[in-house]
Amino acid sequence: MNLENIDYSLYIVTDRGLSSGRTTLEIVKAAVRGGATCVQLREKTCLTLEFIEQALSVKEYLREHNIPLIINDRLDVAQAVQADGVHLGQTDMPFGMAKAILKDSMIIGISAESLEDAIKAEKGGADYIGVSPIFATPTKTDTAPPLGLEGLRKIRKAVRLPLVGIGGLNKDNAGEVIKNGADGIAVVSAIVAADDPEKAAGELKKIINQARMI
View 1 (cartoon, rainbow, N blue to C red):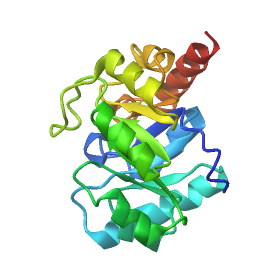
View 2: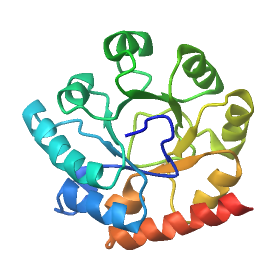
View 3: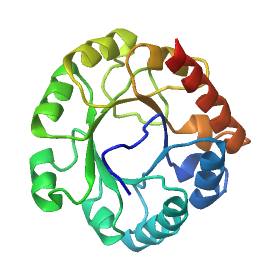
């Protein structure tokens, strides 16, 4: 897979706690059918072996569709399954250490909770930035205050890296996030918790495409 031209436009982050008993693979397949372009596997509580097994099953499907698999936080899991990338938050392994381990074997995304975080991530050599959170979200309770669209615009003016907005995003506000400088939107509950994840992904993809044309 060409890791230099990844489409971050509709970036799904998994969360089994919101999936209503459906497997992660079922959710991912539905999201991809609907138009998801990037998948981040996030597991904060399961055992390492289970995380690896899930990642391998998802990776096999994504490779068939040329869609990148990003692992949240866990460099060891990302390396074990030969994922396409890893995503690190501000309290995860420092970027410099992760880069020293991974070198150029996969992309590294960094969550930026402020303008300063974003500038530091770009200077450090990150491949993309997750601008987090744009709006308040119940999915994660340990986040910084929402940046809002104004915060997103400030980051867009300051950095050239691809920006993926995350936090409280849904079909009602996704278009505005794209119009205000994001290259893509990352969603959790808007797809994972939807009654029909494929339909939800399709609606979001349409909104993203329309916002890009304006």
